[in-house]
Image 1: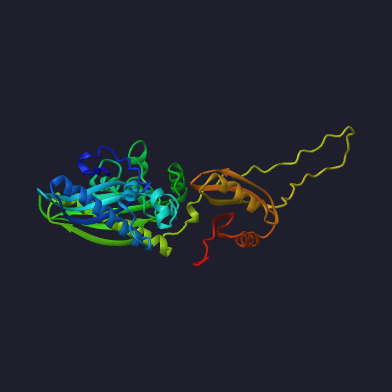
Image 2 (image 1 turned 45 degrees about the vertical axis):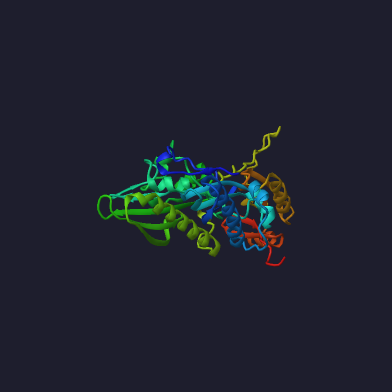
Length: 388
């Protein structure tokens, strides 16, 4: 049987994120079962939670069909998370979370083990309390809530800093107001991210030990744009962790919906800009016979323009595949990958002799979605239409 786990905030000593890349998690599974004794009732409750969790996950994925056998579920479930439980002599009542292995359950549900996710986005959680805004300068309840959050089934690829080293200087509340794109490009490059997400919570306590009100904001981008704002409340300080956990899940849903609707989109101004290529200069040839003839040296006109191509590289094989597709475009005289990031966004440098719009159209005809900003192009494989 799978093991139970809990993650209370007072046991977390660092801001290091949990490894959630390999699981789907379903929360809020309610069970109420009986048994000959307390242990048997608890065991039966976990069995029921596995079945209900599978049904809830299948519904979330839009997949029908029956529930696998308990032995199959045992092999797919990686953990049971105890959110709340009451154990009697022969009865077990609980609210549980169920974690499933992405790789094992993906084939049964008919979805990929990794799924489609956003480009990497660095996360800067800001907590306002008592008039002070804090991010990674010190440990906060808000950063702890994001540590506890398991983002395995989210379409947002969160880059969660550990809160050590330069994090407190680069990713604090004062810095998110900066608009300098060059500064942001430098910061994002250090975290291998393409954009920034800034979830903010403002905590207000009615009186010591009394109700706590949290105003949550989902913000994103170098311009710190507001997507949504909402308010949650608990009746005492004891419920603060539950308040923040609920806020994290709701903000994640907001970010996923914004990603799906295009509200969060690729920002070409944050794209990596490689250093300029040196311009070759002509060297005059030496002659044996002096001459009074004045020789003028002209800078040769380049046969083509240089472009930067940014492209997704989920696997090593995709690098050579996309390079071959780009080299096959008429007018391209050379294409070389200058920065490789397997599982992220790589950068290619190419020379093209022709109209940039023709280059964009040619890439689209080869199955790419193309965004252009000057001499920088962002290409993605076009997703198949429904039913294909």
